[in-house]
Image 1 (spheres, rainbow, N blue to C red):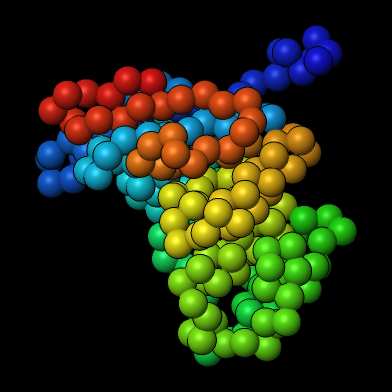
Image 2 (image 1 turned 135 degrees about the vertical axis):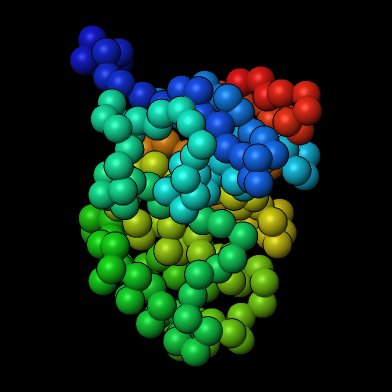
Length: 219
């Protein structure tokens, strides 16, 4: 690692970040950061605010206070759109478009990773041969794999992954781990939510343990 690398700002940094719903605290205040080349594993039980945190970081919800920086600059909407790829619980596809049509449409909207094509991404995630299958015809596990193909195509350096191991078998879990490893090797970073450490990427990892608001949260 060079001196320039050591002095680079975190790819994502949050300070005093907190969120409430109907005046009831959901999480925070939280302070954490994640550098390029590492993952932040966000753990906690149901109701601890993991999904809400990722939605706040993605810009889908407005925080009640605190600051979020991306690559050393305030995370305004345009910067989040370029820097963040979010994979939530819902697949986010058009049900009556094919797997290939969905990926091609999203690449047109969001751009794509250099030297990567939708057909290659489908093969990488194990959906070779399903190019013409309608999204609504896919199983839950296949829809998750299609979401992973979309993620792989994204040029965004920061991945926000909400329970990426859900609906996947052991082979699918290993696929997620390989994708995260490759993304981090290329200089990206990832935030990964999970109920526990039963599934976690084998990469350089920081931990953020979230608990119910009545007990606070520890980074």
